[in-house]
Image (cartoon, rainbow, N blue to C red; front, side, top):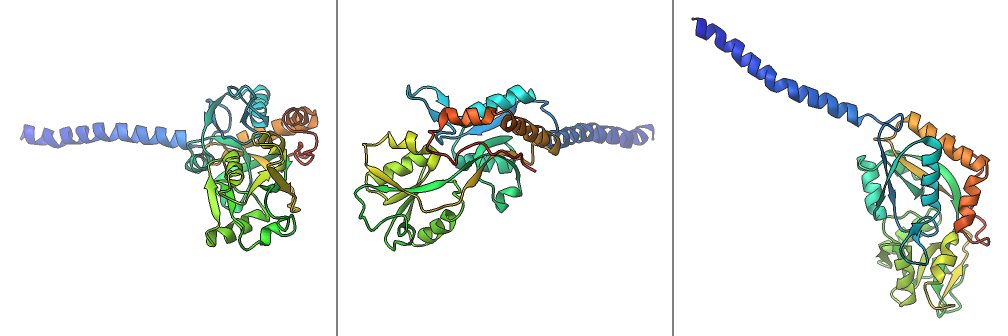
Length: 282
């Protein structure tokens, strides 16, 4: 009788012994999953090749750009530590959505992305269309987006804003788009005749055009609106308190002229739209 009375108690003890570590692990996981309100650990930041925001210098070795300088300045002003990652734009968005990456930069805000990310604008940008210089004169700023035969090279995972995103969907449905890994690769497809045109940011033209033979490309200003370029923060990892801290730091960079100096360091004077946005995010 004594052995039988003791057996249930032993089973319960064993059950609780197995259950307790699981409960503690679950509690720890939930604690880790809570968005950060302060920089209590190093933050992962994703970079991708997008001159003049992140690009190799003329020596081909050192990566530099507006975004690199911006993150360095945010570290100084907030006390946060950052771990740099170099990824494709597609993987950066996948990781931001999954919560395996904390933040990135050079981002265009969309309603779809608002579901998993917060945005802080820090400058503005305009997109142009680049075509081969040998393209017929009939392909110009007025006609390029309605040409029924034109093919377009686009950067995989990138959103260009109005009016380009709708144009791209129309061309994609007609099988007239070719995807490239980055903006430089898209322009290369144009220069070798694999596509008729590519979309390029005004601020990048000076850096990208010198990679190709002089006058091999011409740019067409189709009157696209200015768009905001944003710091993007994963909602899964960055809470409202830390968002406010970054927002205040970027506001201070605008206020004291530091952001303007960073941008001027990497952008040619003629690319006027790519300048520090003077008002902080709401």
